[in-house]
Image 1 (tube, rainbow, N blue to C red):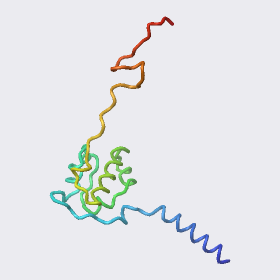
Image 2 (image 1 turned 30 degrees about the vertical axis):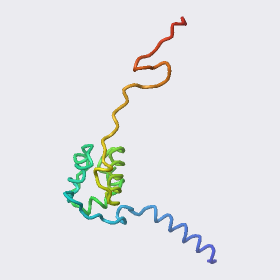
Image 3 (image 1 turned 60 degrees about the vertical axis):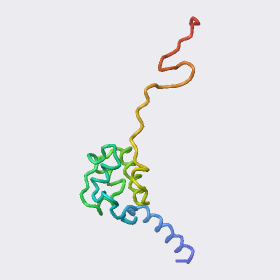
Image 4 (image 1 turned 180 degrees about the vertical axis):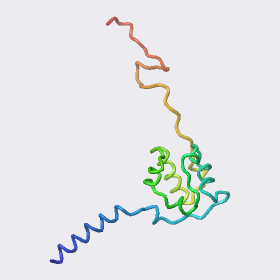
Length: 128
């Protein structure tokens, strides 16, 4: 094989193999901070009743879980994204009180503009 063909094949196979790696397993394992020493304590601290949705007992196994593992466990997309986001903030040593928050409430009024004001449909006086 020529040198250029061999290097291009190596580059293609490396990118293909990298896509199958578990990136959560490569990230550093954060040490327990304060009163958070178990995954259940972490999940209850971030709120949104995630401790009932994710059930992992080991600290190491919890920090090596990926989004694919949470999907297999049946966790909804919004909860999965929130848990992974909180895990990354915790890895960066940001206090939980700074980033944990409740979900936005559902919108009560659908639509906007001049026809919908104060939650009521405004009808024109013009006959149709």
